[in-house]
Structures are given as C-alpha cells and as structure tokens.
Length: 193
Image 1 (cartoon, rainbow, N blue to C red):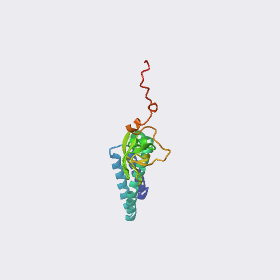
Image 2: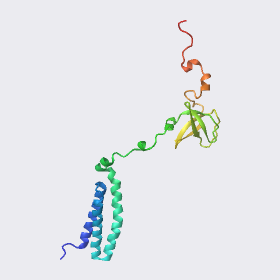
Image 3: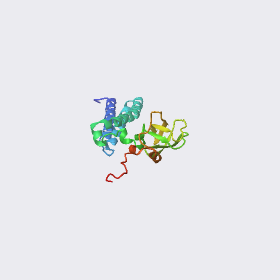
Image 4: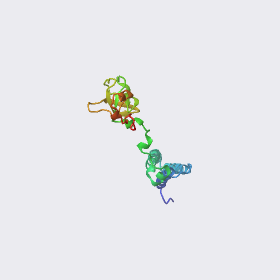
C-alpha cells in the first residue's frame, strides 16, 4: 500500500533537483551538488514513468526546459546577492572597462589643419600633430578646425567658425609674429645699467 502516489514523489524530486542545482551555482562544491541534482532529476523521471509513459515524457520535457531556465536565473541573479558580491567583488563600471583615450581630452578644442583634409589629414592641436578626419567636407591647410567627436582613437573635426580661435600659438612660426609682451618674456635690457 502506497502512502503517497509516485507522481507526488516525482514532483518533489524535480523541485529538490532544481533547488540543489541552484545551490551548486551559489556554493562551490566541486560538482558534488550537480551530481546530486542530476540524480534527483533522473529519479523524478523514473518515478513519472512508473505512472505512465505520457507522464514520464512530460517530466523529461519539463526537465529539459527547467534545468536551463533555473541555471539562467541563478547566474543572472547570483552576482546581485550578498554572497555573489562577496565572491565576485563589485561589478566594474564602464569607466573601469573602457580603455583610456588621450584624445577624449581634446574634445571641443580648436586646432589648425596642417595638411589638406580630403576627408582625413593631420591636425595640430596644442602643439601635437594628430591624425583626424572630417565628415566629408574638404579643409585646406592652415584653416582652423574644432574637434567634434572621438571615434575609436580617431578624431572627427569640422571647420571652425569665425569666433572660434585657439587659445595659444599653434606652431613655432606663430611665436615670431607675436609681440614680446604677449609671450610673457621680460625685457632683455640690463636693469642695473
């Protein structure tokens, strides 16, 4: 005389298998919990086949769907749990993961085209020669440009408007055309004479 129908035991073993499978994700056991979960799933299927073939195949289908679903949910939510955070550490932010790009600091700066840009060429910004490209328009050498964006280590520039001028000289030749007072150099006359 059975106290409980085999289908009830099959359902209980299926639930136990799912719980043990989730524990395998949370607790590093070297695969022992995975073997126990597999045994629970196999036992559940065998008990279901004792009732009928249709019930057995229904449990096989349920196991095939439940195991990946349970593992997916466990891996999705494990890093968010207290134990997962302690085990994995804090998740990195985009700033931690993305490489540092020195050209990002030049965004919005004004420079001078040093070669004809059809659509790419050399641009001098704050004394540094940098390869840049335009969005299709040709830029003549000596024309002022503004950095509008940085794409994968490549700067995109546009022609500067009339009111956009660089804040400091762009080449040594420009230094010779400026007044000495503007350069911040003291007088060369001897103050004691």
